Picture 1 (cartoon, one colour):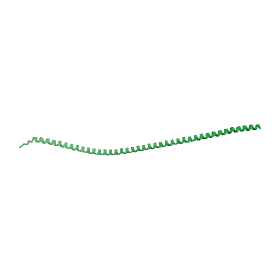
Picture 2 (cartoon, helix red, strand yellow):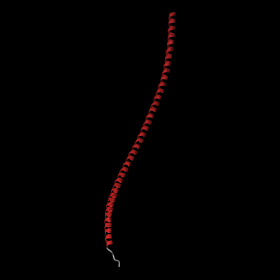
Picture 3 (cartoon, one colour):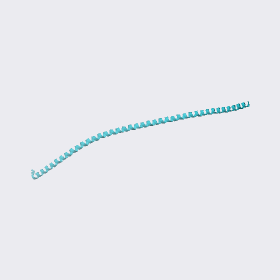
Picture 4 (cartoon, one colour):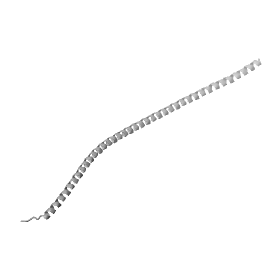
Length: 147
């Protein structure tokens, strides 16, 4: 019987050691589970923070893109408006040049007519001068008696 007691004692001791190891294993598992749960919650929070940061960055980029598109559209409208003004000014300038050209043409025509008239008058003046000289010569030969 002493072997039986010895075996029971060893078996009981081994069972106690096994129970203690099992209890320690369960305690370690619970601790690991709590730490893992804490890590998972921390990772979820970090992920949520990262997602919020990404969303904020996307919104910021989208707002900046919209702002740039608005600036581009405003600038494009200003350029189109300026180009239209330039085209209108060029059309008015063209009309003014055409009017000035017509007036220059009329003035040229007037000057040409004036030159022809002046030449004709000069010719007549020369002719009259010759006739006057001729008359002076004839009158020089003829004496006018004064009474």
